[in-house]
Picture 1 (tube, one colour):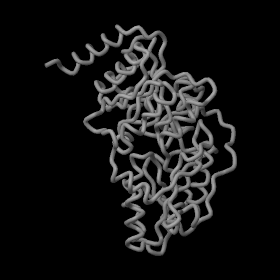
Picture 2 (tube, rainbow, N blue to C red):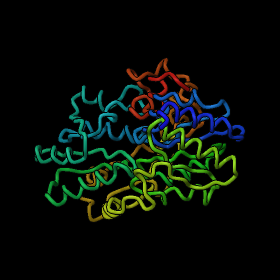
Picture 3 (cartoon, rainbow, N blue to C red):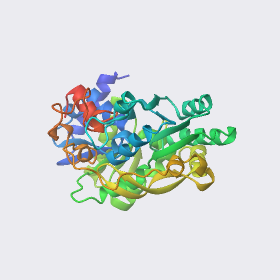
Picture 4 (tube, rainbow, N blue to C red):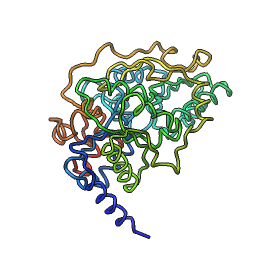
Amino acid sequence: MPSVNEKAEMLLRAIRGLDVGEVRLMEVCGTHTMAIAKSGIRTLLPGNVKLLSGPGCPVCVTPGEVIDSVLALAMERNVIVATYGDMVRVPGTTPGDSLQRRRAMGADVRIVYSPVDAVKLAKENPGREVVFLGVGFETTAPGTAAAVLAAAEEGVGNFSLWSMLKTVEPALRALIGTEGFNVQGFLCPGHVGTIIGERGFEFLPREFGIPAVIGGFEAEDILLSVYMLLRQIAEGAPKLENEYTRAVSKNGNTLAQKMLERCFEPRFDLWRGLGGIDKSGLRLREELSAFDAEKKFGLTAAAAAKPTPCRCGDVITGRIYPQDCPLFGRRCTPEDPVGPCMVSSEGACAAAYRYQVI
């Protein structure tokens, strides 16, 4: 049986043997972003095959004006903001202003590892309002839904969710519709695929004629997915293929889908780099509105983003590479980030900086 390195070399030879011309492929998953950078796959591919990062990092696609509203909420006297670690260092539209800075100013900001931890925090602090920042795509949304349902069942009225949850399909549709869109194939996110199934990506070849492959996260998975995409392009036969069959099924996780439908409904939402997209976000249904932080506190995002030299929005829509941003590695580093793509562990800029690859 060939070793991992032998399999990788076989795949690279097969990739080099395909006649596809100049090709731009896009991954739309933060885990893929980091895996590609760490493994050095970009440097191994022939020069005519480019890998771009898309809007697959949940923290990165959350716009600065939304973060500004989070920062204002954090300063409320009776509020505890519970969030995942990445969100603490994400700046708003003012450079350097983040939950980490607000915590130093007296805000009560707690890092949690799951939404259930935030519910527990609310039970431990019955005299305080605990707001959980629900960031993520379909992968994390079921866990958030479970926490809200648990809070409702247990009567934890001082817990609420600020849902920044988003869905992948509307974003990809919006991206494809942008001026100058130039991507010939999508490496689709395996984690999201476990929830929505193969069906969730069938629209790409069916409606847009764009090859799509749902891929796993090992280097061999990614190389095989790239080969599958290039083979479709060479044959002129776009379709959806599933490389990650060990985790992704045709219909996905129907129990998780039912939980999402029970708790959430689609809504218009804001995306960094893409603007407002109809039915791309998830908000709590009316019957769970008592746990909706936006309604409880009258929260809204700022009307318009302030101009900023940070080009994170261009990075996550495939317009530029991280190194093309004038701030990259100069004014913007993981230690002192200007934009979320340098903060998040799944951010394209953080990955490029850490592994020093294009």
